[in-house]
Amino acid sequence: MAERAPHLLVLSGWAGVLETALSLGFDVSFIGSTEDFTPRDREVLDRCRFTREIPAEQTIACLEAARRIHEEHPLDASVSFGEFGLESSAVIADALGIRGLPVASVAATRYKDRMRAILEAHPELALGWARVGDAGALAKFHARYGLPLIVKPVAGSGSVGVRQITTPDELRAVLDDNRFWMEGPYLAEVLVEGDALYSVETVTLGGRHAVAGISLCRLAQHPNPAITEISVPPPPPHDRHTQRISDTVRAFLDAIGHTWGLTHTEVKVRPDGRPVIIESQTRIGGYRIFRMVEHAGGVDEIATVLRSLLPGGADITSPHLPETTAVGMVVSLIPPAKKVRRTADPELLRAVEGVDDFEMDIRPGEVPLPVAANTKRPGLIWLRVPDHAAAERTKRDIARTYWIEFEDGDVWHPSF
Image (cartoon, rainbow, N blue to C red; front, side):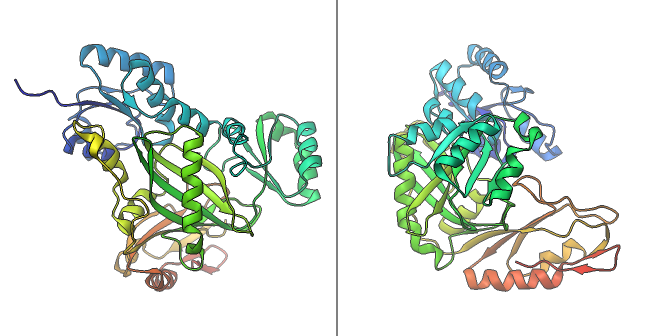
């Protein structure tokens, strides 16, 4: 009798994850939205054993559906690599007694106040913080820590709702903003200043944390917290912090009880060189960082953790801080918010050496949405180049190739 293939439940995400799991020999089932799936994506979905069209963030509904799947064809593991399926995936794994993300680390990273409370027991990882539900609580926090500070939703993502406060006038504006406080509660933290944010991608197997890649994320000018560029690995001189950042993130993952799966952790470095954990998620990084990590250092994060769930997977390992032999990068277009008359043909970018792919949402007759958070962008361009010098050449070629003409006659070229 043939051995039964391990049955894997995937919560949310994209068809590429399903395709990878199927190619590795899993029997795959899927719970989540397929609204954005292409016809080819649906062909992949048709190869799954069970499909349930349930929003992956509806944890109780997902758990009930998973129980029914489990009764009909026992599940061996539950995974999610996207934002909205993390909690449901962890709860299902815990409830059914199958492999998956640890509840402890998912809870610690999904709720920022919980993470800060855990880190209070680890002075080397701690940062001044408080849960603030009204203007009075923020005023007390300011009286204790002073400026600068940052206020963010307790369970938010993508920098939505984040307010950096660096001056007394900015503080007064937040204290007096009644509409802002209606959306609370918030987490107030001491702001680690600077436009350099590091992203650390890890693969944890059997409690061992391996850093698959580190990127440098450049932030827009204050008060906008949005990311404008990501580079894997960090260019000089920012690469001098790599080892200390790596050690800090591994200590952090131990502190929150992470024992299996991927994490994406954001870190800033103080002027004295001390890395500070900003936040973390038990998933891959956005903006295709996982692809850039694979291009730069050769680690396929998703395939690695999935292989660890196969029979004999206890022997699977992942390299720690692998040597990088190339550079992956994504740059964001942030044009003025003016009505567009016409643009260069985006397809011209395919002829630019080093351009790997792009997404453009800039159309004649429309006004590009202002970029105020790490959500949808007017334009993103991915680069695959041999080194950082080549990346700079490619960015200059992009700036010469792509342009936007506005109704007022101005012509805009990207600047990076």
